[in-house]
Image (cartoon, rainbow, N blue to C red; front, top):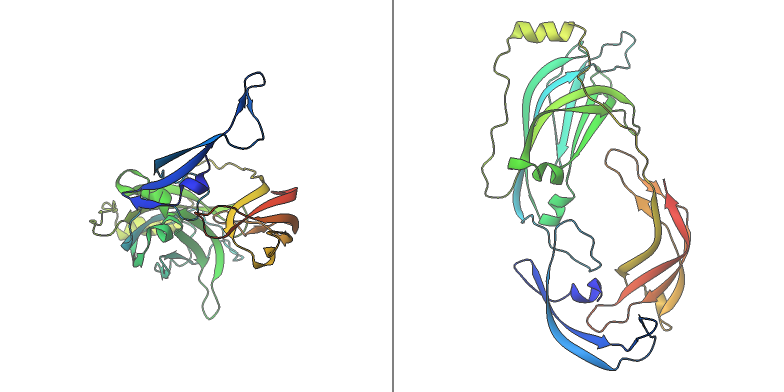
Length: 308
């Protein structure tokens, strides 16, 4: 049974109910395999499919556990430590920009500091659908503030809002993150932060705040040499091999034969890195034959492509 046939139907409480006609094919008793012959009968049935979150299905739309409405993201900046700077002295003026839900807010400026306690919170609210929230990113960018000049980007931390929502209580508290140089994997400092993703009509949690500090302690931390936190980073390699694509929008060039040769390319995006584009591929495009589907296209790539 094909998910693209069963995934389109009446949706009730995250369950798809669809009518299906299943062909009964003759089986060779000796070879124990289905012969490539005509069906000897059909089984008409009603099928209920439970859609699981974050799994791969080849139907055009999928349900997500997030509901639409006004979502809120809270980011509490705790501390920056061992921050590199482009200044000749090695000590800059860091300022942190946090972007989420289509908005950007910044912390106060910390003059001549490579490490500093921050204890600042920023709030974002916007109306989003469930699918939009599943793709939402929290981008924390550390910059070096320069008077009468544009700020220089030191590095950034990118967090998927959906991964925060999967935590217990839909939040995490005072976790360390490596600050990565923009577009690469080199570590240029460390950030400690808390974050919460709040669903519509839900209470905003109280993120842990620093209660024992004084201005003198903050000054001592800014002026001292602070060791990096105990945090390990791991290099990794991602290889994506593409040879087949299903349920794509219908291509008008397929008429009237229902098949055509097309040139396509693939793009892979990893949070915090520049997009990776493949070379152009020659692919055979064919129209999907199913009365219960809107016109769609399936692609069979003639030569498998790899993205690294």
